[in-house]
Image (cartoon, rainbow, N blue to C red; front, side, top):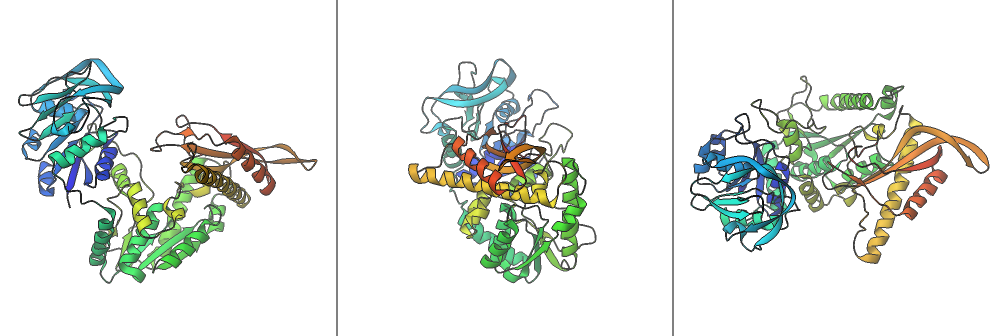
Length: 524
């Protein structure tokens, strides 16, 4: 399989670069700049992309790499900091720019393989305070802006190219075409990265690795674990046991839906552990959201490992880990200098207790991004409701209930959430049927939460003193930032009316308009 290396120098768009490469049916993987050059040689990459980064190349504490990487005979593309790094490696001059560029900037390009079929002038996304004042010997300038004399350069003899702008972001109008040119015109890729091949090859390799042994998978009902279960089931059938811990904090009827779906679709052993009462007892009197998270997480894995312990002998442990999980959880400041920090430890990257012995851990989705996982799920025949399931917090509804978690509050938020999501989906469906496309207001995530506020109301000429439900909906591209979705007022009115009339214990409904930042997408 053809591979492109994305060599990470601390850039915020490292995953996005890899994702854009894969959009062109070429497999890309991310490695930190601390990766030894011997490792890079052994992997036989078709091309290498240097990412951006927040540092200055002329600061010796910044991330650098051996100049030998430019002598491997492998095509290289430098982006932003990566562009400046190539210039610095070749003894060019990189300096603080007299005028920084940030945002959409018009760039003028010259004839080059990199800019095949690209207009002479187009808009790109810039984000830099340093610039190349003088390119290295053997390099020619192939693009410029009004304030950046070297917006791109090339060394055609060595197949080395560099751009100061970011072709991976959508704001660069022809960024997709530029990356395509690098992959196909310069690296001479054939484009063999397709989902059908991935499924076939993964199933084959899983069968070879597992043999006649058993596999245990922690099934949450989320997208990643569901697709992992589908792949493993196709590979080894009844050798797979999925353990589904139902802590009583899932959405309305979701536990039953997960069980029905997987026992119907796949040949596997399905174990459902119902422990809602236990979790209610553990959460009694707890109001702090972080403490609730810790209790739910700790107890979840206690229950899970107790169930698994008797089944673990001489078998494999499987996880729904995906590629961003590995990147975010696994990389850090390996040399004490600036590299992308560990962002968070992911719930689906589980540390096993010392007394449980597995042969090995299997992560069948470890090379995929989220949208790629969804494509695999669709091809495996997993229902749309699971494949396109909205992000759901690991602690479940426990963090969407402000204050103490009780069985009554769980019932309230489950019912309110079901009504809210049903009405939003109904309105979106009606709009699509009428206009042939999804509405512009359609949120990427939407849910109901239960506030800890009670207030006076009047229902049926009688005084009430009940809870207030908050409904939230956001539009987002990357879940790093988000804005409140502009759901039509008439839809919100219907939601309000139904919740108040159908959900006992509620007499007010609020719509949360808070963006991220300053808020979070979740409500806790």
